[in-house]
Image 1 (cartoon, rainbow, N blue to C red):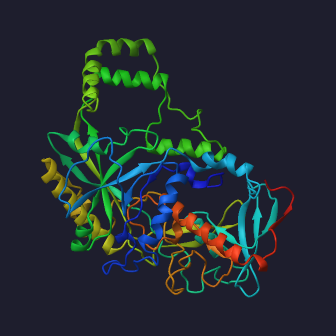
Image 2 (cartoon, helix red, strand yellow; image 1 turned 45 degrees about the horizontal axis):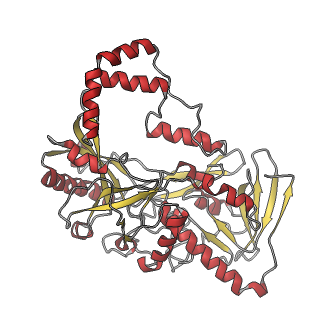
Image 3 (cartoon, rainbow, N blue to C red; image 1 turned 45 degrees about the vertical axis):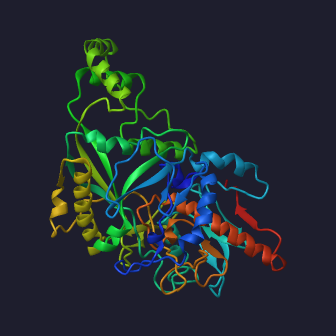
Length: 496
């Protein structure tokens, strides 16, 4: 995404730490295990709270401890657990733009796209970064250290594209760059029918939080269940599906849509943020709106005739119930993906506007992924039935063990393509995120994750970035006598 702030312009704000079990080696998950322990990450999670502007919260591995506005459902802790996340109120580009503009030791180049990291003849260091704009201007940047922080797909693409010296790309001596591509697959697991759907859905409704950084629960699989059933990590979100909408409520919603055109769904909200971000804006684009229904007078008349419906909905709201009764509950699953070397990013033959080879995504799920979806759906369904009453009906694809294509999609959480390992034959970067075999090149972002848990990745990205910044500061201070005083840049015309 070529915009100031990058993909963080589209961030949903969810902050939650990974758990110690997410970081551990699990004998049923091939290629699992981080070279870092939870104890090593914990102090950076503490600092990441301030950077994400969520205040100060106590947390344990895998969950914050701040009580949500509504008490969640109680479960058999050997099967399901409530894990709390906190929602950040900021978009990083907007929140920190002024600070970056005013910093005397930082220069931000806009419209400067990285074309290649050019290595020394020995291939053991980066000597310069070649950059260019869509308008055709090019230049180079020289620095003592380079940090590649372009996202889980672009980090791999750029390393693979930097092949003028290293034939197969930088850091790719063992053919690992781009491999182990993961996401957080999501899909509908089934439908839950109950006489009291609000009992299940209201505690997990994300519209009822308090304060600028509210906390919300998610229903996750317990560590005991993960071990007992040999599963990948996962969570489920119960989503209320409305029953028949009373005429008065329908008229009220249409009137609101006329006066204040809403974002219609998550996809359009994403589109609006994308439009704003591409303009280097910090707010939702006011020009992107839904087409309002015509006839205000007719709508007002319908609203008057449906005043009783509106009054009843108001009473329901006072009782912390949804305005329209729910007919049933959809259970939407979100899962960790198994590390798989055959799931990968490679270079396509097609080129982009800068003349660079595009990324080709070969996203693959494994037998362990499919086992997790089926087994987790049964666990979620059975425990929710026990805790809330009702009946769970799994989706057809869940029950079909021969289903070749699970009905899941990605969540744009791109992980694993420059994975972290102390062994250069198992990972692209070491525990300090330095590319193996290259002295002055580090990688930041979710591409270094060996595994992803189910947690929203940005909070861990921030924690790892703070850790990397501290490491580089210490390294540069200790080597100050050996380092030139300052980096330089040269351009063929203005780039910014």
